[in-house]
Length: 430
Image (tube, rainbow, N blue to C red; front, side):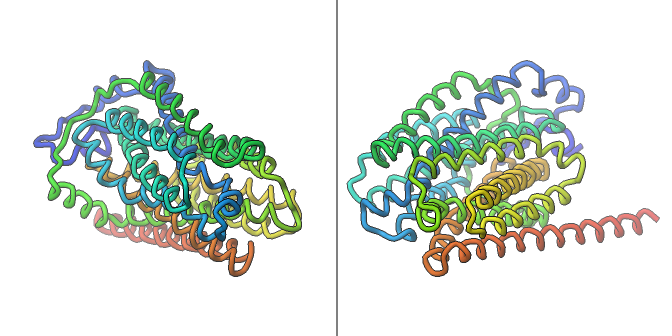
């Protein structure tokens, strides 16, 4: 029986995969309400909080950073794009390290480096230094997403995997929300440097709690760091049409999200809204909607199927983009709610599907998804800001709508491919 069906850990470079029977897997892996599951969920929730709080700590502060350094939105946005770009570049190498040294070890080291850099960010003397520090921080955080998903795929029963990953994604949404809300109000009183310093201190607390809470892995088998083995595994994943579609969907969803939340501060500080920094930070409370939509993604897939859930997520995101065009603050807020709900639901569905689809090298499969996901964030941040500079908010919305069309198109192609495969199997059976 394949690892996908048993839930067994199959690791890149391992000489002999260790078979795990259905009964053993069912008895030993964590499940909701079982031993260790609550501690594991809280630990990874806090890791998600720290990751997103640090990764996007400057996003709500871009107008203030622009003002201090005298740069346009497109230049200030590099403080976000550098962090997400660093993560995108290093997530695959970090996943290889996790295959050799263990998920918990790599996640702990990554958080330790990232929070240390986070304490240096407030003292950046120039925009260039700030961008470099943010790139290093993003590279350090690369050890979290893929390793966390691989840890869950190995330690949690397959039927509970979507829910478990949804809780990790929910932690991401809480981190993204709290980081932006806190920085908004702190920056209004004491400036953006104090704001990112506070986020750094909060992340230190999350990192310590994560290390104390996360249960010791029981189903991990160390693999090899041989580059050829890694390249073969990556090549196998990229040859899988379903994985390619999921990677593209993750990137496109994040293009929408990165563009919208990079530029929204500029829009709301300008006419006709003219909101202060603290209020703009509080608008990120809509991330709570993402917490709910991500954590309920498992039930959504159960009712609509994976592709049905993706159609719903894409449609919700598109509706939000259209509502956000209105010159009315309540309608803009409604638009942000819909965009956030659609994005987090789509992300949870696609990322959990990657973990279920990969039959070996799960860390690499998740790493490729995360790499494309954060490439989408970097592209969304820079292209969205450039479109805003050229054509205002409607330009940013136009970029987002194109990305949603891409999500729907890819999902339609997946639906057709599944139908063709089903007909072929039917013909072969007769």
